[in-house]
Length: 243
Image (cartoon, rainbow, N blue to C red):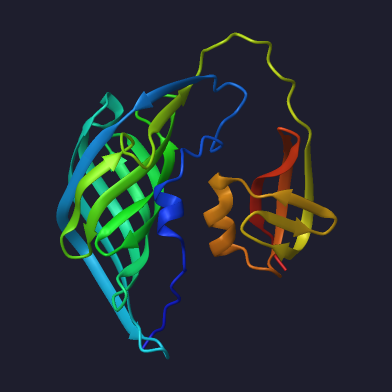
């Protein structure tokens, strides 16, 4: 039977976190607008579940499924809702993680959330239906692998809010483009917050954290590019290189 690893995370820390506004912000994003929405997605399709029991006697279930329903609220958060989700849950203790993609019309955001006894709380980032506008939000809902998402909230909760980042604003002079540096070779060190290739060590931003953590273990040969963001050398792109 296939075994799965369950990531231990703090429910309280994530549920109470503020909006991660660093995601995708560039020199042209100068306006911030509050948005909020609610959603329900209870129609389940393509569900696949694999389970195992750990050496400690914990039952682990990993499920991939698509959930459909409706969303309402701010214009970019109103319409048909589709959630492609992957959950990994310790059903013995009722804890786990749920990751996936939430689509409402042309709005699309990737989310990562903590599961705690039937409820999820986490963050989502992506793009809104409005052109050139990004969406950053706290997300919460009641969740079941068989019944889907109910009582869903995008922003507008005690755990945090949602914002859209778009062009316009103060009209300050544009900052000159930051110099980009690069390195290629095997990854010699990688953590949740930084990555090192050769002589170059860069901070990993929120927008790339999941990608780096899941797809780029130490030893992987890559090319990285980093720019100076707010005085910190920050990863802007990463790709695998042939051996």
